[in-house]
Amino acid sequence: MASTATTDRSAPARAAAASHQADEAIAPTSAPLAGFSGTRRVPPPVNEPVKSYAPGSPEKAVLKARLASMANERVDIPIVIGGKEIRTGDTAQSVMPHDHRHVLADYHKATPQHVEQAIAASRRAAAEWANWAWEDRAAVFLRAAELLTTTWRSTVNAATMLGQSKTVFQAEIDSACELIDFWRFNPAYAQELYEEQPISNNTMWNQLDYRPLEGFVYAVTPFNFTSIAGNLPTAPALMGNTVLWKPAASAMLSAYYIMKLLEEAGLPPGVINFLPGDPVAISNVALSHRDLAGVHFTGSTAVFNSMWQTIGTNMSRYASYPRIVGETGGKDFIVAHPSADVQALAVAIARGGFEYQGQKCSAASRVYIPRSIWPALRERLVGIIEELKMGDITDFTNFMGAVIDDRSFKKISGYLDDAKKNAKVLAGGIAKGEDGYFIKPTLVETTDPGYRLLCEEIFGPVVTAHVYDDAKWDDTLRIIDTTSPYALTGAVFANDRRAVREAAMALRNAAGNFYVNDKPTGAVVGQQPFGGARGSGTNDKAGSKLNLVRWISARSVKETFAPPLDYRYPFMSEA
Ligand code: NAD
Image (tube, rainbow, N blue to C red; front, side, top):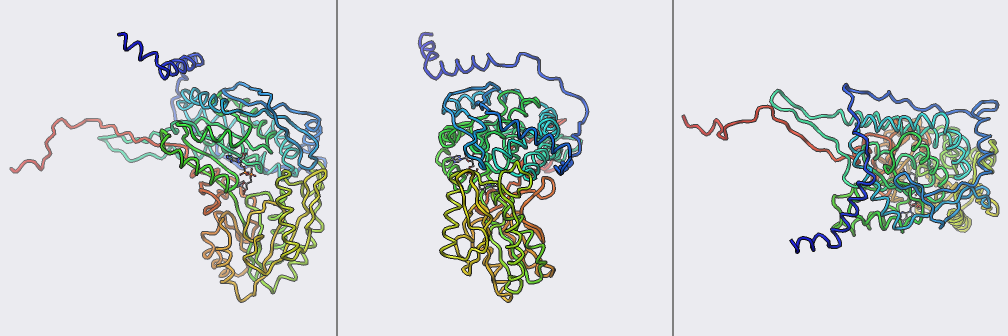
């Protein structure tokens, strides 16, 4: 007896007992939800229509008013763990990129202890959330979609415009429409997935139980799409997982409003835990924890590689093999054939290269043009670029805002300096950062197909053109396939159908999203599932069934109705 008592009082046992008590303290007291009878169907998803914000439209008046009120607020953004707001007093600022002395918010930074607390909160929440009927989980996100369509639309759009310097159209297609689409389409894809069941017969019933992963999912989101910030934590949560969400420092205001919207939609405490702060300090704890079940990441290739390396180093610690899903960088191309429509091509390069200041993973940044159409294209493109207005995004006549922050501004300025020395700058080439981080849309021409501006991701409004001899179409396709480590998006412009086929096949592995006579940006949920391979990520296609598959771990269940009662088989008789 004495020795048992001593053993029970060991440090691990005391810790286990304490955590058990903590679990009990917050355990839900209400009875479990009774299940409905009947097969429920989610509403058929439809893409959210893009509002025009035309002069005199009601949406324009509402948004302008919200932009004005938000510019006069200074939001105090907490950490959110288990539904509780935590303020550490150790804060950093969120500013407007186009007016960088204007502070929009202060956010409190999570410490490694908060990450541990968030893991514990996610474990407690999982006990109930993983066992909810999936339709009830889906209802939370369908309601979130409707809140974003209606009462939250102007707030999330205004936060994306002011905090990430998106024009009204760029905010509307991202923070409103794409995120609404993610929250409407994912429940329908989940339904399709759950409906997939194995064959059975009169003697047995075979079933697939689509369990969530065991442990927590770590979602790390980028600055450039509010919709991605909203999708990365919620897609695993829809499938029954609980999540730690580390938002990007430079998109904190829109991320915080999404967290508040999800709470209003009925997301239970602890299902998604919001952890602003130092990415390395937070990731070190999350990525080395035994219960890490998955990573849902979008951002740069270098950061994803470093996370994967950390996971590799920690392999022996994990209870399960973590699912690693990452959508990363791009060096997206447009290749024109001599048969291309020059006007359509010029518009595609301008929109695909310069919208949102070229800060889309899918932005066109290298273009390959045959010599025969180059003079006409160059003239039209330079003409368009000279017309593009850049400035404060609350002035709706602007086509572009500022780039995201000082670090990005300096990096892009470095590429402009390089182009001035080693290539020909045909338009733009000017960076002005005193008040806002403004970079003029820039067109560079180079004769060297291996020039670094054709190979490296710049993530700014810089398009580099390489002019090729019309006879070298096949060689050019080979060059495009091999010059960059990425394979995210790409486009071919041609009226000659044979050329379209040739490009589509030669560049089959050079892009996860391939466009014919269209710009390589602007993928829509349900229409062009998005993602790339090679250095651009694991290509798990955000906003599709392929992505949701990564957040479940299926269990096969076989039930035999009349089990055999004799161990002997018929063949065992010689008679
Ligand atoms: P980033 O890699 O700098 O940051 C992404 C996230 O990782 C942020 O939350 C950041 O805080 C975090 N982070 C930074 N350093 C980290 C570290 N050492 N450990 C763990 N986390 C860390 O990227 P960004 O600037 O926010 O976004 C731009 C990049 O994202 C571009 O490379 C772009 O191509 C890519 N992107 C890809 C897609 C896609 O679907 N393929 C979509 C959007 C953006």
